Amino acid sequence: VQFSSTVKFSAKIQRANKSLDFAVLKLDGSGKMPAPLKLYVGSGQGLTETPVRAIGFPGVGAVGRVGASSAQELLQTLSNYRTPSCTRGIISKFDADAIGRGVFETSAAFSPGSSGGPLIDLCGNVIGITSFALSDKVSAGKYAISAKDLYEKVLQPGGISALAVEDVCSAAPTSRRTMLFIVVGLALLGFVAILVALRLREPTTRPIKKPVIIPSPII
Image (tube, rainbow, N blue to C red; front, side, top):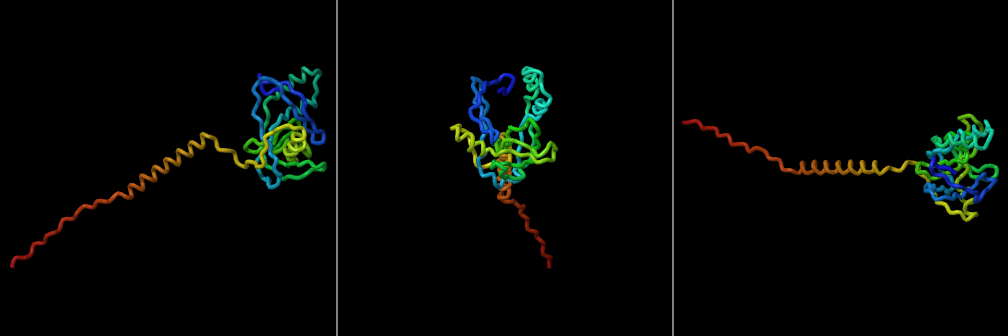
């Protein structure tokens, strides 16, 4: 398994589920492991129109169809697809398929080669695993198997731990820099408000009018 040009790990299958089309790999190596993603294990209901992102390697699907004369040539070709694609969309609905898997329909586009990639919310939590489409057309429905199925039917029975959450993010978290600008802006507004309040409380000094003396007529 290769994460970059320098970070590589050997891997072996730790657990697999053919009906769900999932396999869990165990990585071995001394390099720095990437941070694990959290799996959404909620009911899946009420997520319609939740913003999501689909991540995958769509070009890999074309490599399989073209074919390669040797394993070395195949690996060399696959190395050209190290940068994943990221498409945006929303969750259209959640339902169960014919074999009982929880499935999310999404408008986020993906094509052959992207299956197996994560469907994530705006906080990076994995909602589902991209799996199939009704056709190759861009407008065709795209479907992702629920991450809850992966968690409950593959990971937990195999004693494999994972980070799990029961809520999704519908808005991206605010960055530290943005929060700093907000705090500084509120502080400046508060300072201006104090100055205005003090100005309004200052006593106003009015000039004292001198009495006008009208001389009386001499009789």
